[in-house]
Amino acid sequence: MNRAEAVSYLLRDQPKDPKRDEGVYFAPANIALCKYWGKRNSELNLPYNSSLSISLQQYGAKTMIRPHADRFNRIRLNGQVVDNETSFAQKITAYLALFNMCSVTNYSVDTEINIPVGAGLASSACGFAALAGALGRLYDWELPKSTLSILGRLGSGSASRSFWHGFVEWQAGESADGMDSFGIPLTHLWPELRIGLLIFNTLAKPVSSREAMALTVATSPFYSLWPAKQNADLVRIKEAIATHNFNQLAETAEHNALTMHALMLTATPPILYSLPETLQGMKEVWHCRQRGVPVYFTQDAGPNLKLLFLAKDLPAVLASFPSLQVIAPFEGRDVA
Ligand code: DP6
Picture (tube, rainbow, N blue to C red):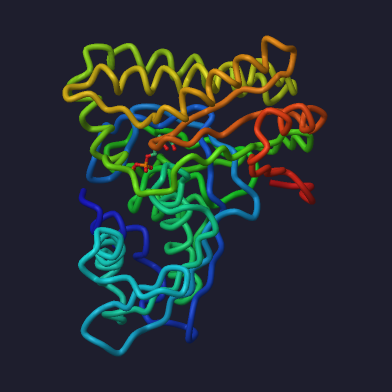
């Protein structure tokens, strides 16, 4: 099954003509505490392992989609028209082409993303989730969120986790067509948890996570160790969430991220997303812990760090990281 066949199958009983003038959808960005790194099927973005993330509350993508009476799609990001030749526009165009069983041929897509794009801050996750959700609103598809999650996954794997707030597990699934590979929200709330964005560089990454993942799987002599480590970390993280054991959660997440980046260094050619500032930031986090402040980090496919800590430690964390952008993922929520 290819991506277009998966979309046709998922939408087999759904309207193919727009039911309103526009569809609008907001999807939060998500940060993986237990990472997705390696695909068993790269056409369908099917992972070897399950992963688990925390959503970033109000930070994410809001997309408005409308039919566009032109020969091309018109794509706008944060109010600016994006040249159709850019890889950003081409990815969106290729994704929209998967929905060619629908009556609209071209769309106008307006996306507002309030986190830096392409810098390892999960912009593709929330971007594809918002796009799939906006299409669903335009056509009035009555789909369970698990199906929307599959549609998002076909754009970018991590998008499967961006349809909910709070903690979300993306279960890897086993079937070849990926129909059992989608996000599932965890019901646990953790109001004291804080995420801090430590942004060193907002330029687009030199190597996409897609390429980096494929290279790691194909060339790292240590990749075979990853699935077992990942499964064990997932169990520890879920247990820590259920028991509100912050140190277990954050220590496991930090080690998971460091292991993923260590694997990348052993790929050929090696992949290094960190900048000198990233390493400086890591050392500062470790110094904080030595001074008794429980703060940890995670890192994705970019140089920026995301800090994990509890609300009570905010003053101490800010003293070491004054520029930190702080997010309270559960603020104002009684359900995920
Ligand atoms: C390091 O979801 O961007 O952020 O499926 O190829 O689009 P594609 O990859 P993507 O990879 C995300 C990698 C990560 C870890 C994670 O979010 O789990």
